[in-house]
Structures are given as structure tokens and as C-alpha cells.
Image (cartoon, rainbow, N blue to C red):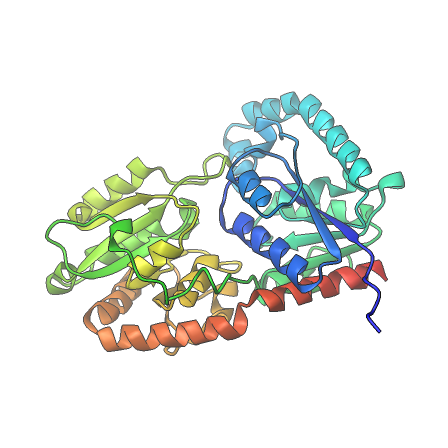
Length: 413
């Protein structure tokens, strides 16, 4: 006898940004994974900005609603306290002027949620976490998932705001993207809040070493060697582009001549003061004497081809990484990775087996690791093969879909 199909359970995802950074690409993978693992969960999305994420969601045939966040609110981020301290009156004026627009945004989102009538609301960013009690209360009461993808330690404003927001939600579960983030966020939530660590996943059919590498994806650097070494990240200052540039400058001349170097990415978010500009990084490269050895490549929405065009992928974050999606994606593409091993990044690989480990912000140590891989093709191949095997066991979308669906079932009970 054929079992009766499970009734549809509507899940609405809230995301503050619409670019395609790591958090947004992880959200796309999550939605597809949950729908494939347990089709009874029917997704819709509310974005607080418009951009490429909307297009990608439509490709997945996911209904999307856009309610634009006031610019002054969207620009608040990790540097908000610095701006408040150094230019308090202007910062406070900008926030006050944004209040009417913020009130209208809250009303619009509440109206959309009332129409969608989801069984679960899944928030995917700090700003939507903070606003969720305003959206899901009284007649709109719904179980809420906060998907925490950043450390709260050191973010005095954000951590305190979450402490104030969490009591406004009767049914709250927190998904952290690594065990390190889970331990961190528990410090700021009421005792008894359900917190679980669920690693991100990677589409192993798209991020694969089997597809032919296309060297034309990256520009040829005149007179440089054939080993391609690259850092793929947004231009957030803590992503370590400056450390990567300094490490290149420390390489012995013969090693430097054997390789080409690339910084792939760009300043994709609106948060004020937290990102490098291309011009700043170019000046750093010029002062370090490596400008002719280093090419800058614009941010790409589909980085799989970039990873396959590289021989070595460098992760150089100077602060603990909550997860490190670029590490997982490069490993899935069978590339040798060098990892700034702190935070969630330490959970993704086995040092010396599926990647090389370096201390964050240690340019000298990074130079040694890059030199070892540039000079040793057997080591590159061995690390790359082990990295792919690790990805196939740890970063599957099936695992992600079932683990997130388990959280939904717990909330609905």
C-alpha cells in the first residue's frame, strides 16, 4: 500500500542581503537540499535587498518577495561601534532618519508573512535575527530558526541585541554553521535555547575536479610560472588579502618565478568601512614589490571554474573563520588548500592530509606553506585527492537537508 503523502509545510526564509557571498550561496544550497531530502517543506523567501540572489532563487523556482531595507540600516555592521565612537552624532542622525523607513519595512514584511502563513520562519542573517520578534508575534506567531553564520564574540552591539531579541520568541532554535560558532552563540542566549551545529554543504556535482580546467578563466601573468596560487574571498578586511600579499613578497626569487598569483573577489556588501577597495590592495602589492606577479580578478558568482583553474587555493583569514565556504568548495574541486586554522575552518580538514594548516595573520608561515606546494607537485596532488575524499564524506547536500529538516520537525512538535 502506497503511504499517504505528507502535507505541505511552508517555510519562509528571511535574508538581509541579495548579493552572492558565502552566506547567500549557502542559503541556496540549503533550500535545494531540504526540498530534495524532504519535499514536504515548501520554501519561500523574503529579501531585504534586491540583487543576484533573487535571480538564483527564481532559477530554483522559489517564490521571492523583496522589501528593501533603509540604506542607513543596511550599512550597519561590524564597524557600527567604531563609527559611533568616532563620528557619533552623524551615525546617530543616520539611524534616527532611517526609523520611518524601518517601521514601514517591518509592516511590509509582517503583511507578506501573514499572506504566506508559513509554519516555520528561518532567518539567515544577523539583521533579520534582530528583527524577527517584530515579525513573528501575536497572530503571526511561528517557530523561528536563527541560522548563525558569524561569531558574536567581539561584536558588543550585535551580541547584546540578540540577547534582547531572543526572549521575544516563544519557539526558537539556533543552527550554527560550525561547532565553534555554536559554542560562541550559546554564551549570549537564554539557558535552554536549542542550539545545534550543522556544517554547510557543497554541490559536489558542480564543485568537482572531474570537469576540465579552463586556464582562460584567469588572466595570464606575463613572465610568471605555471603554478597558479589564488585567494578567493570577498574584500572584507579580515579575509587576509594583505597577509597574502605580504606572504608572496617573502617567497624566494626562484619560487616566485615558478608561480602566478591571484586575488579573486570584490567588495560585494554595503556594510560601511569593513572592506578593502581594489585600489588599496593594488597599492599594497606595489609597495610589497609583487604587483607584476599578482592579478586581481572580479568577484564571480560561480567560483567552481576558478578553483579548477588554480593549483593551490589559499585561505588567509586573520580572524577565526565561522565556517569557510571557499575552503570546502576548493576541497570539493580537488585542490590543495592552505587554511588559516582558527574557528570553524579547523573543523573542515585534516592538517597535512587534506590541507596545510597555518596560523592566522602569519605571513611568514603562509609563505613557507605556499613555497612547499609550489615546489612539490606530488604534495599538491596528494592533498587535492584527500581533500575531494573529505568533501564527499563531510559536505554532502543530503546530509545538510536531513539535518536541517530534523530541526524543523523538532520545532513543529
